[in-house]
Amino acid sequence: MTRFDRIIAILIQLQSKKIVTAQEIADRFEISIRTVYRDIRSLEEAGVPIASEAGVGYSMMDGYRLPPIVFSKEEALSFVTAGKLMDKFSDYSSNEDYRAALFKVKAVLRSSEKESIAKVDSSISVLPNSYLPKADSAPFRKIMNGIESRTVLAIKYLANHTLELSTRIVEPVGVFHHGQHWYMIAYCRLRKDYRDFRLDRIQQIENQEESIAKTHPALKTFLNKISKEQQLTEVIINVQRKNYKYIGDQKYYNGFVSQTVLKDIVTMTFLTESIEGFARWYLMIGDVAEIVKPAQLKKRVKVLSSVLLKKVK
Image 1 (cartoon, rainbow, N blue to C red):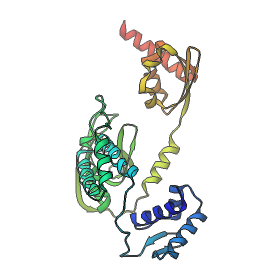
Image 2 (image 1 turned 90 degrees about the horizontal axis):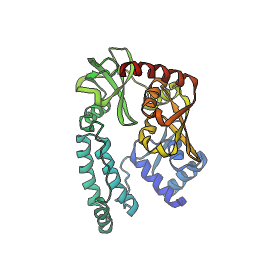
Image 3 (image 1 turned 90 degrees about the vertical axis):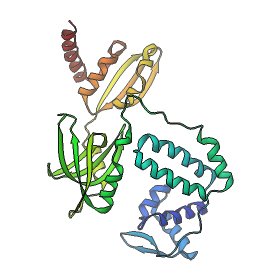
Image 4 (image 1 turned 120 degrees about the vertical axis):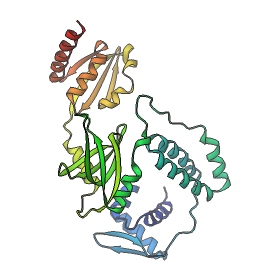
């Protein structure tokens, strides 16, 4: 990206939200804070009315807008891919909202860009996993309404470990996607603490009129905390090369990191947060794989195997 293209992109970014910090710009374009200052100064010298406040960030003066944005061919084509991913990872209401927005975007595209989108639309597909539930029940809209209006939510939640349905009054903080599922971080008044709720386990949800009085930390704070709290254990297994095909994509759900191939053996390295979960998965492939480390995994597999053998007998 040339400096001119970057400065134009920064101008568009400044119009995308009320306040943009220098660090946000630096992270996006992988430049130094000093370079951000120079780019902002160039925009100001060009007559762009930018307001800045030390320790807060930059904002555009009210009433200033760019002329109609012209999309590049590559940017226009990215809408198609985004739409396919929305179908897979979002709910029905959000998909409908995206389609409506996409029609408006297409309306301002040049004819050549519209033709490009039409040509590739049928050539990109994201197939659903028949073993996983559809995202149609994910209550994005009501959660987003709660976050935007700062109102509480009443949910009926099916806990995975007890399979019990409970009613919770929660104050939503944000949502995030991890693995194959969407989660909501919220303050639970029943537990008097912050909890994460898997959206496909929310059986019912209703927006309440009660406003949230408490100021909650940002979503990023909780995500950083979750990441730090994870206790990961290194696991190494050897798999016969001829039987490697049976491992499939399951390796990614169990903390796969890397692998090396030496003659007829594939050595696979994992970082798992659950020895118990990994041991139970290992039983599925144990006839074609060997545990190299850790010893606690070997011990747990022996116990599970013994119990399984008794049940089979």
